[in-house]
Image 1 (cartoon, rainbow, N blue to C red):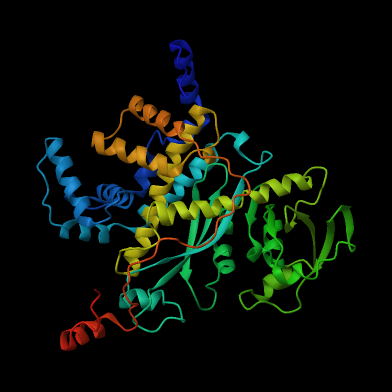
Image 2 (image 1 turned 180 degrees about the vertical axis):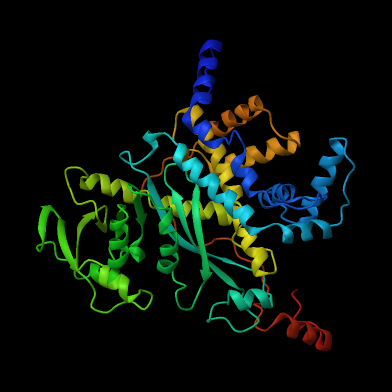
Length: 455
């Protein structure tokens, strides 16, 4: 919070402006933005204007294109410009022309700059921690979407929705999305481990990768070790059942070092050359902490005690909350674009909007001298939406600082060990389930009328 005494408040603001974080988040010469801006003739909706409207569209509670165009017309009229038409055709065509690299490049750029500029104290024991996990989003049921992202095999044709798998790489300190990989929900090389391998170039020497039991495989650990990246995963279910702490080099109670041997069978995704260059053995650390069986390449118990690893793995749940903020708070769970190309753009625009909210939270956290994970994402979103709807224009630096103060006022509660049932209490409407394609059901209603009317 800002100090009530004027001199102390001015010193606090100078400290905020002098933070390396602020200079890292600002592109003074605009070289990065300029390099991403595509060439083209002047239009009513140029690419950067279209992207700004797209971001505002996904942040709004009303995600319709009509609302985005109405806002643009009112904004132009308020600024003394000729208002554009309220028809959505020009804006929809502008979204199709907008290159995918513009949204994806800016989303990755904001995430990397944010992560690189945060204070060292926000890292884990001075080391950046990257969270990895997977999720899925549904697309509209159109033939192009079904062709590229087929629905679940458990659903009958015409009843399910196309599903797109996402594997995301998040920054634990700032909460930013660094990169995501997209793929199908089924098929060869479409699993989460395969998608994670495409994200490994984002990791740097000294990083710590934190994930669940799905990622604790021999070859992934070898790959991370070759990049000088340490890993902390939960032990895989098959090996969990055969773990014996009486074997290997004991480091303490239920804590030891074990030597793994290279699998005899080469995975189908791996080339012969990569398989031959993989080490024959790999030493890892197994420990039981916090009710979990963990594996890690952090082998020294003096440098990294068991209590530190227990606290670190407890933070793995943050990636689940990040996906919840994206899918529930922002509404990315159900995409609205009817083609795979536009759906991919929509995903990256959501990620860019998410990073922009996170950027405001990071600056508010610096101002309040807390960590961003202590601030409420939904509250931050509401404050930014209210500020935008009230001003209807770009905020001045002083006004932005006032918004950061408001964002920092709302901190989330500390609820260690919270347990909630994965069930809903409120019942849905008493309508029967649609068990046949919609077109067939409509034709039957036209011929026979509704089969059953609710009283």
